[in-house]
Image (cartoon, rainbow, N blue to C red; front, side, top):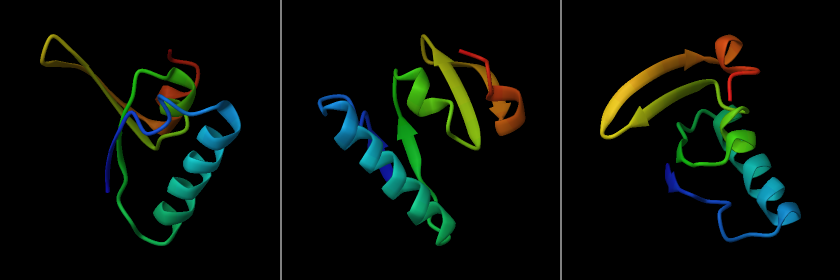
Amino acid sequence: MLADEPTGALDSKTGEEIVELFHHLNQQGQTIIIITHDDEVASQAQRILRIRDGKLIADLSSHESKGAA
């Protein structure tokens, strides 16, 4: 699944529900790719790819991304 700013226009409660749905789908074997500017959403990912000006500037696994904002 590809989700571009899936929580961007939502209130915080609904955004949390969407993120929980993504966690559930991922546990069921679904690959979820989220494009976001929200560090709180990104920090929950197993892997974070940071892109600036069209170039990959960081590739972080879940243990590296915790606390990296």
